[in-house]
Image (cartoon, rainbow over all chains, first blue to last red; front, side, top):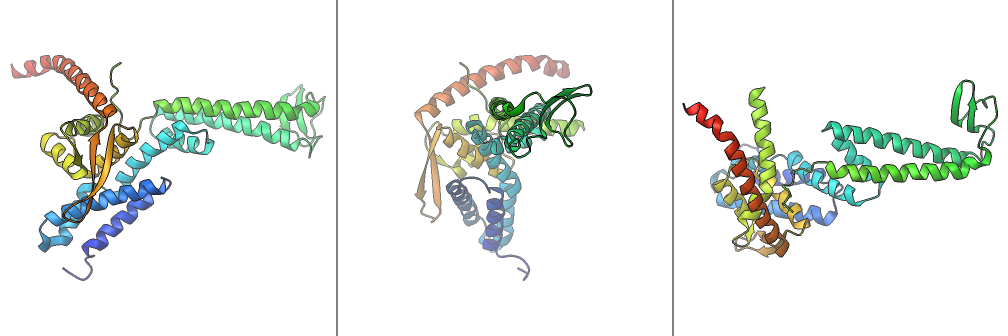
Length: 203
Length: 119
């Protein structure tokens, strides 16, 4: 064995460390269990192989196991979709939808719809919050040139229609947009493929 | 291009069947990961990367279809033994019936192509 060949245990540790990085975001106890199981697999496969060529054998075993990126992505995909289906956290839902959007057209459409929904909701809430600070510049104007809802700088001509009502309306409708988008995306995620598509049982 | 299409198709098929195949290997009794792998390697073409089995085992466990129990082996490595739960047994049976029905229909569908080729 030449000097620059890493020791087998070093190779295994490097592999598992790379996998651990891939599993970031999963519950810590899950990560430990996953690594423990794979470490056992590697150890057992190594023990039964020719001990003379341990280094080469470990390399072969790790290759047959698959790259940390591949295995990690399988664990992550299962975990992400499972979590996102059960959560109301927009961050997790959006993160999962983004991953899905890179894979299928349906995922991409769901992602765009979600983005628009969240953006509208957030914008309305921001309007409501800013109204007390900039009473003259936040509002709803309908004039010859069309409609403006939000911040008009400088203040647009014509009558402003909502007045202070923009606060309850902004919060209410904005909140409804956020909630509606979340419910919609959660529903859409039922159609997102997991790492391994399930064969559904009849009935 | 055509070659690539065939590979993609095979990869999809493997993913889809892996879950059924794993449940089937556990039908007769408990096994640990490497034993399940060996069964599948000996009796199916489903395994390309060995590591793909473990995420499926984790998912099946989280879905309550199988349960795992850690045990120390004589060789000193801990092994996680898996066995079917009651729900898992029901699911495995349903999947087996469903698979058989599914495969016999596909088989009937592709028979004419194969006969054509033999002439």
